[in-house]
Picture 1: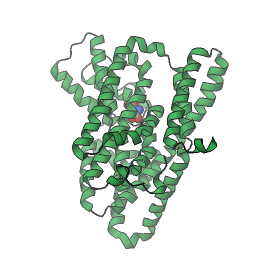
Picture 2: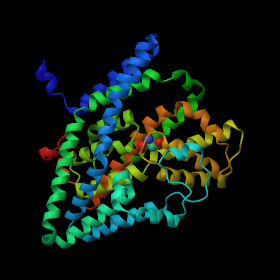
Picture 3: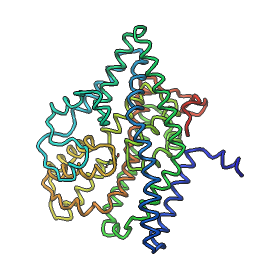
Picture 4: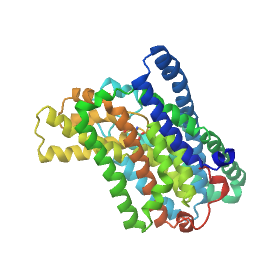
Length: 413
Ligand code: ASP
């Protein structure tokens, strides 16, 4: 029996934790009426502690893991042109970030979203004033830039900086090991997160908004299961089923935690296990978790249509084009943490003069949608990473196709 349990992979344990959490949460929601046991003991203590302990551990990993792995990844890229092309992509991504003069609600101030910035300011914001304070405050873009620069210099100076090279390589190794230890708690963490969410979820709130809810879900499903696989096949001819079979635990984790940022370590690890070189993923995954949010953009598009129809406002073609543009911008400006997509939604509403109050209406069910869209967001990052690594010959196809095992140290799940 014990041997059987031991043979279950971590990915499957995460799935089991998630399903059990869902069931326990729903039982609590519908059948447990004692508020002391339900709310005080379980929801506010046991599940809150278990879930957030795990998210905090994952968050703790993010900055050092991203920093070391970018430095090591870039330092090991022998072809400087690869760095050049990735950097151009980065610059474009950043340059397109949302811009100036938009009114945001008080909620925005409570989050880390960059708002009211002009384009030049956005670009300037990428350069750390003080790299240590960027590292300390977990400011992803300046951290990525600083790591990139150190990596390029290490690659250039090689023998001269051998000691530092070694320090970063070993630092990276330490962070990967720490990730694998923290990940062992994932099934329990995911269980608590799911139980807490579904134990407290007012499912009745969904009914009046059922159409909106289903519309967002359909959009997300098309993106995840039609658009992404199609892109994968067009650009790489790789088998998408192979991808989903192995990537599902990462989607589940993103779903349970609603944060792309905290999913970075897991995403990096899973891609290594699929044969993707860290040279590419250590750069694209944190970048994607910061600026690439397809799921969020989809929710924002549907939310605009929902509000326009609810208020009887007829949006013409030019307003719709504005929505497409601002929703993409807003999703780029959305930080990879829970619910921020709803905050940046105000920017989209403002761009076409929709009443912000409508956001209050969908607020109640946004948590559940946030879970789904975060799963889509991280999937997009992974698909892009596979495409980029394929084109840069930085993926071991034998490992991707399951003909060869990945190296042991990166095989966490
Ligand atoms: N929670 C989302 C993420 O982390 C962002 C959002 O749409 O609120 O990807």
